[in-house]
Length: 449
Figure (cartoon, rainbow, N blue to C red):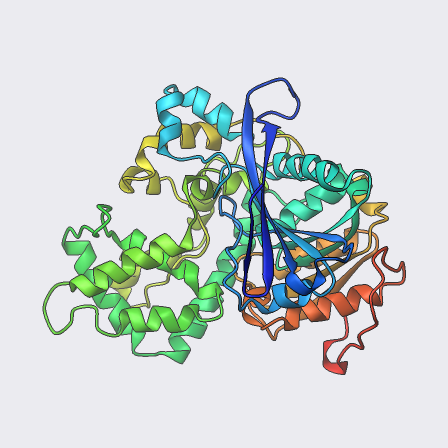
C-alpha cells in the first residue's frame, strides 16, 4: 500500500486479489486496483466511505488532477474510493497481451464474459468487506457506473447505506434492441442541434464524406478513415463541449488543399481514441444490456437499418445532411481497427452468446430499502431519458432529479453543482441517511421531478 500527498489530498493505493469468476472462488485470480482519497485536513476523522464507479464499460477510474469540483465537495463528507473496474487501468488489464495467453477465440470470449456489472459489483463487495467489514458504504455511479449501482442494489443492497446516480439509470427491462431504438432518435436530435448551431458544417461534413467515398484514407493510427468511421465521431456530441469540438474539427479539414490535411487526420485519431477506453469498451458495450436468453447479435448495426437517415451514401445522393452516429458499436470496427482486429472472432462470439446472467432483480428493486437519488439528464444522448424515468418508477425509494441544465457529463463539468444538488436531495430523503450531514436547502428551480 502506497501513500502520497498532492493538492491537499492524501492518496492511498490499494490492490486486491479477486476471482475471475465469482461463482468459482478458487478459480483464476485477477488484480483489482482502487485509489483511496481523503482530504489532508480530515485525516483524523472516521469518515464514511464513498465508492466511485465511473463510466465505460472498459474505462479506468478518473485520475484526480486537483480541480474536480465534485471530488472537492465529496471529500468534505467522505473518504472516496475510486475503482479501476476489472480489466481497466491498474487492474489486471484486458488488452492484446491477453491474446498471447488465450489463443482460442472461445476461451477469450469466455474470459471476457466475466467483466460485466455483476462481476464489478462482487469485486466491490469484497473490497468493502476488506476495508470496513460489516459496515455499509455509499456509492456514486456515473454513466456506466450508474448501471453498476443498480446491479449493486439488485445483488448486494446490504452493502449500501445510500446510492447516488448521475446519468446512469438504465432501462432495467429493456433489451439491447429497445435501447438502440430509443437512442437513435436522441442522436438525430443532437445532429440537428449541431447543424442548427453551425450550419456551415453541413457542407463541410458532406465534402469529407464525398472524399472518403471516393478515396482510401489511412489515419496515423493505421485504421482506415471510412465514411462510417467519420460518422462515429458523433459519439462526442453528448458531452458538454462535444458540438464545439466537432465544429472545430470540421472548420478546415482540407487546409486549402484537395485532400484531408495531416492536422485533420491526427485530430480525428485523437477524438476517436478519446471516445473509448480499451478493447473492453467495444467488446462488452452491447453486453451491458444483455440479460436472459436473447443474444444481442450486433443490435446497434441491425437497428440502424430502421433509421435510414444514418445512411451516409444515400444522404450524399439526395443532398441531405450526413448524420453522425452516437455511442454505438458496429462489427466493422473489429475489421478496420488494428487494435481491435485481434479480438474480432471473440467479439462475434460475444454478440452471439445465447444467454447472460441477470443484472437486475426487479422484485428486489421494487422492494428496495436503500435511499437512492438520481440525476436524469433531459437531453442525454447516451441513456434514454424515458427508459431512465421508467426505472425510477420501479425502484422503491428512488428520488429522481430531471434536469435540462447539464449534459451527460454534468458531474465532471458542473464544478460540483450536480453533486451538491444530489447530496442535498439525499439529505432530504424521507428515509434519512445513515451518514448524517448538515442540511442543505434545495434551490427552487431544482426541485425533484
